[in-house]
Length: 353
Image (cartoon, rainbow, N blue to C red; front, side, top):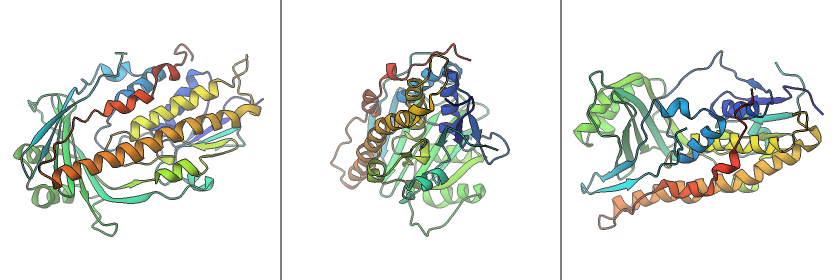
């Protein structure tokens, strides 16, 4: 048997910190390695669908967010070419509520994971699209309804969602060649290009939101993903080493499931590790490989399915609707995918220290 802190987590992002918390709920201490000097906030906002709230419930922290942000119940998607608008709904899945040798290593080190590379995973590939995202601030209040709005056109998708009565998260996704212009690290240029070029044909409401953007939150990034067959058929673990979050399953934001899936990873991994604890609450090193194998088998099906059927499907369906004005966009209920994720399967003893 191994000693405490014999679990190493590489990366202190969402997957890494959530995994560390899941282990802590089981009474297992872990060492989290992060190359940045401290924890930092980047970007504008996170999309959390019901499966993510189930994971946060299991981790015992969902109540810290539900008291701050109201849930989004309704969304609208508008075809910029025709002006046609369709409504879709969201179901509510919340319940209100320097390392030496180690026994286990979990790579949570992002899209370009060193641990994933060591395991033999193929590098992520470009989706042919890029995303601009930011946070708009209205000091006197924006006065908008608590609903998710999207606008689609050939080669682009844009949208926004209010976070509070004064803050709005917005995004703009567009087709871009891999050798296209790079806007990284230049928020003033990003805002100017959006207003004067990429988004100039969008409704005045959207443009006003762009003008109110807090430039410190404005980001640009190419959208990368891992082919689903690489996840399904490549090695996601070896002995006592595995990956989680973007290190395992980088995906495009069409479903808003990247962060949600990372939280799922943490709770599922914690559950499988919990099964090999001894009566003294220690990890039995003889069973680590079995626990990791169980985690990998469960997660590879889930995330492959998300990337292939839902990620691809939603993106191409919206494109088809724009290209064929007579085609009606069916009600999009992202929560269909949540039926695969059962809340009772990720329970932890929240009384653990």
